[in-house]
Structure formats: structure tokens, C-alpha cells
Length: 611
Image (cartoon, rainbow, N blue to C red):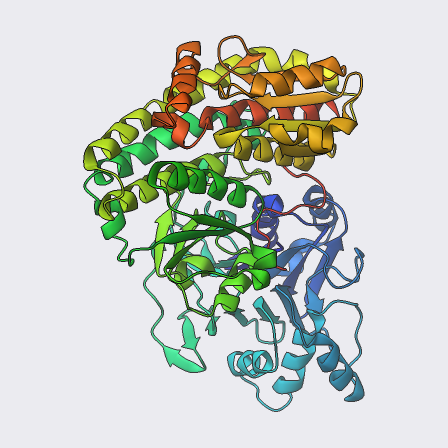
């Protein structure tokens, strides 16, 4: 959740640190700070509990003539200790020689603090991260080599960490990681370390991801260790995106840009993957065993995407599925022959990674992530790349759509390989998927003209209901989540048939009820129930809907006929994917009308690296 940046450059490091922190804002934070080595071998530290722009103003007011090109920076999301400048990173040792930035959780921090305090160390903050600075300080009193001192210090830690340690005396910088992401890069401007490749994309075309147990000194020649042993530095990998991909272009915010990119993202995915579905290659190339049951593991939007994938697998291949909320995985009981589909946009979601710990390698794991260099990707038996490109908005949009498309294609290929569907049927289904970019674009255009006025009618509402049936239900769930995330209004999603079993009591005159209408015949009776009680119904569906974004009326008639024959052809197998566009735009527009920051909603982070 927090962000790390470190730089070893010529001249003044502060512009690099501040620009890097600005690119990490999307991860979520409540304080930020930097520490830069001075020419007289000390550390200048600036911290703020406000936005990066405020920190930039503080730094601009400094006398920067004495600063060097070596420094570290951090955006903090409070876990241990309140949001105060004292608790903001970087943290220092007693002598203010050692500066540390840290992502993760030190589970034995209290015991270490007690031990170090008894040895005379004085703590200035309430956070777990500060113990690292004092552990390094203690070791340096006996061992002058910073890399060794960091290795000794981390040997005392329990939990997860990505750390960068800066020694003001020598100017040396060491990075280390355990169960938390960290990358390093060498570029024309110098050496960089960050928790996210996007933070350094403007300067570095390649990077190296640290693996668990790695520590590296960024020097003229990198010194790389793994498990305490010196090893050759890994071969750098090309950056997954260009710095230009982070620019807004003509869009007002990153969320608007990322919603608009969805047709292009889906078209690209189909170009990459579609041809390998019907002959089974997409599945067989993964090298996984066959399975009799699928367990989808995820959180939030990723879990909703998994629900769409699972719905397709049940309806098309009659494969039983389980949906597991990752934070509740210790209560899950999986049957033999189960494949775990672990979904995480960042690949660093702590709840998902800890859930895999609990399953202890007893089941094969297929990861679906937007980060091939993530912890999840390294731990899985096989990986599917979402290929969504960088997503800056905290509320996921195009990664949801990409996860659905990639997951559906992979599962269709698995069904062909297992003989559950014929190759011809798979070809037909993939052919239907080629309609998706056009459907998404049509939904975008329809929503752009209709949603602002609709939102004006409901902007004063304090709560919303979202309804759907069958394949539409996961999209209603995702729509409710988006509205909560962005507008801070209560929103709940229910199967429409559950209305009369409780939720209908919430409907009074003017209550907004958003209905994802995929043509399910029984849905009309549910809409009538809401309207009879004064609910303000917003339908997302065919040509006669308030937002005509789910195919054409002919498609709805086809669905009704198909349901009567107990078959779900084509796009109906995984629900109305195009409906997610107006749901996203509805949430965004409401948030804007309420004055909320749609790219950085309060209390939320893009990459949730703590449980």
C-alpha cells in the first residue's frame, strides 16, 4: 500500500524523489517524506501529513546547495501509529546517520522495540518500521559494512518488508525484500529503487525485481545477494509500459482515461489470445493438470471478475466452482481435483498471498494478474497476464474487464481440452467475444450522453440498491462496489429475487435502484416491485433501458428463447460485460458531482500489501 523511491544520481536527488513519489500517489497514502544525504555527510529530512505537492513546497523552501544525489522517499499508509509527521517515513537511528523507508509489516516489532530500548536506543515514533533503523545502527557498531549490517538486521525481522537503507556517513544505499515488492533499475540518470516500476518509468527502460531474501547495494557495480550469498545480478527486464502511458492526454482524470481504454484493451487481448482457445493451446501451454472444480480466490473487484469467470464455467461446462474471499480462506474446504484461480491486479495483495500459504501447495494455482513480476506470479504454478497496461486510478476499471476476458478465454480453452465442450462450440463463443470491443464502445457513447443528467437526479441520495439476475449479478455487485469506493455513499447489490426477502424494506420514495437488465424475464416483476414503492429505477440494458448498453433488443429476445430451452448461447454465458462501463461512469459522475477525488478515494490504496 505504501510507496518507496530511492535515487543515486548526479546533482540533487530531490527532483527525482518528489517526481517518483507523485507517480506513487495512486497506491494510497496519508503522509510522505524524503531523506537526502548532504555534502557534510548528514541527512536532511522533510515530512508531511498532506499531499505530495505540500511536501514539494517544503523541499523547495530548503537550502538545497548542500544536497547530494543520494536519497530515499516514501508515501505511508498508516498501520502502526497515527497519521503524524513523527510517524511518517523516512525513519532514522539514534545518531541520525541511518535513514530507512519500509513497506510491509514487522510482526515482532514490539519485542524488538523492547529489546532495543533496553539497550539504550531511543525511539521517536510509534511505527514498526523504526526498529529497522536501530537494528542496522546496532550492527554497524560491530560490522562496518552496510550490506552485511542490513542482512543481519533483517534476520531479526518477522513479517514482510521492502526496505531501502541509506547511510549518511558513507553515502551507501542498500535495498532488501521479503514478501513485499521492490524493483531496482540502472538508467542514464543513475540508479533507482522503487516499490513500483511506474515510479521510475520516466528514467528507466529496464528493471530487476527483488525476490524474497534478496538484498542489493546500489553502487558503481551492484552487489547482489540472495539468502546471504553473493550472486550475479539478475538480467534486467524491459519495463512493462512507457512513461507516456501514465499521461492523462485529453482526459480529466486517470479513471476517465482508463474507462475509455477498455474497448482497446479487450481488442488487444483477443488479438493475443483468441486464436489459441479452440484448439486448446491456451490451456495446454500453461502446463497445468486437468481439474474437476475451480476455486476462485480474490478480493474486491478481482473477486467480482472471478465470479463472472466462474459463472461462465458453470453455465458452459457444468464445472462446479467456489468463490473464496481471500481474507476468509482459512475457513475454506477444497475438494480433491480443485484448481485455484488466484486473481490480483497488482499480484501483491496480502490477503491472497496469505491464503495461498494456508493451502500449503496442496492444489495447483493459476494466477491472473496485471504484474508478471509480482509475488503472486512467482508463487503460482502458471500465470495469465491481464495485459491491461498501467492503471493509475485506485478504483479498478480496465483491469476488471481484462481479468474477465483473459479468464474466460483460458477457461474456454480448458473446457475444450477436457472434452466438456466441442471445438466448434468454442470457436462460436470466441467469435461472439469479438463483438465485445464494439459493445463496450457503444456502452461508453450511450453512457456519456445520459449518465450526467441521471446522476443529477440522485446525487442527494444517501443509499443505493443494485440488482441483477443470473449472469448480470456479478456486474451489479461490481457497480455497487465502485459507487461505494468513489462517492462514499452506501450501496448494496442483491440478486433481484431476494428483494422480497428483506432489501425491499429499504426502498422508499426516490430510493435509487440500479438494475442490470440482461433480458432475464423474471426481472421485470422485480422492477415493478421497486417502482410500486416509489423507487427511482435506473435500468442498464437493451434499447428500451435508461442506459441502452447491453446489446440490442434482438439479443434480449434471443436470451429469453435460450433460457426457455435451458441453454445460454454466446455472450450470455458470462453476462453483460459491456454493462460495467455505465456502472463505472455512474460511480465516477456521482463522485465528481459530490466533489470527491475519483483517482484517489479516501482510505483506499491500489496495492493492498497488508492484511
